[in-house]
Amino acid sequence: MISVDKKVKVIDGCTPGQIPDEVLSSPEPLILKGLVSSWPIVQAGLASDEDAVRYLLQFYQGQEVAAFLGKPENNGRIFYDENLTGFNYDTVSTKLDFALRQFATQADNPQPPTIYIGSTVIDNYLPGFRADNDLDLSQHNPLVSIWLSNKCRIAAHWDSPLNIACSVVGHRRFTLFPFEQMENLYVGPLDKTPAGQAISLVDFYNPDFEKFPKFKQALEHAQVADLEAGDGIFIPSMWWHHVESLSPLNILVNYWFKGSPALYGKPVNALLHSLLSIRDLPPAQRAAWKMMFDHYIFDYCKDNFSHIPEQAQGAIGELTDDSARKIRAKLLNQLNR
Image (cartoon, rainbow, N blue to C red):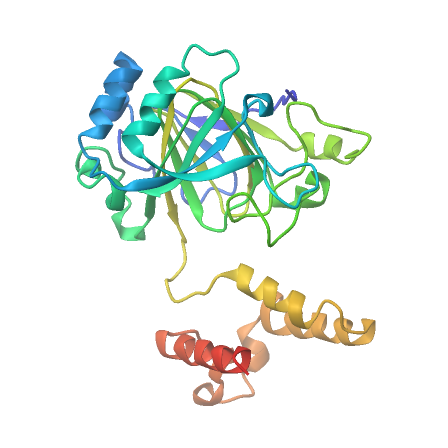
């Protein structure tokens, strides 16, 4: 495993379930020590894995969940196959109670097959769980999900929303990088990914510095966070994070929220559309469009458009629910031609 010297800053003395005001505006990740230590699921897990499973299953309604199953020789790595045309795991539908029994069956196996259930919406699959196991983030309308696995590792990736991830059972390690390290992380395909986001192709347990030499530069900017049960971590938007689940049973609850008005679209859609429409233009045209994006987007200044009456500014004016609907309608009309 790689060695990282810099530790993520720790915020001690968190009031259980409450997010300190300074956290959500932090430009860097923060460990929120003991944030969810009072949750019943955490207390059950500290007693035993069996108690945690028993507590969780009282909310389960019997629906099937999606699970990744990996071979023991993968050593818990969720990744591509050798040619990057497929993956090193099978995706299956299973019952949650059956999957949890498999964790127990494999608990003493030094090299178990990987069992990973990711990003499962709690309110859909475990109704009532959040009544006693929740953070006070209702004003941000978060997407709240549960993640369950035995020992496994998820390649470094980024998420657009803000993220508060809570380790409720087991131990986890996050290795994080600011987004500007993207080039040094050797990112894989955009459109074929294990779980929706492009990932680093570097194996953090056995990095190949001949194939990925700039990864050494990325490590100079890395931060590591080791989470005990009851701890949370705040991950700012766009920070790369590699995640290791280190116990025979690991349960995490996370909160994704935009930190911006709901009317805003997904930036990755603009990226994909730009790949389709701009990337392969002749150099002079690409340069012109770069200037266009700088003018309207990246170097946007309201004063640059003061020569246009406010009521006539349309798409370049203040974004409202109405103007956002009009922009989306125009985009759909253009894309459907």
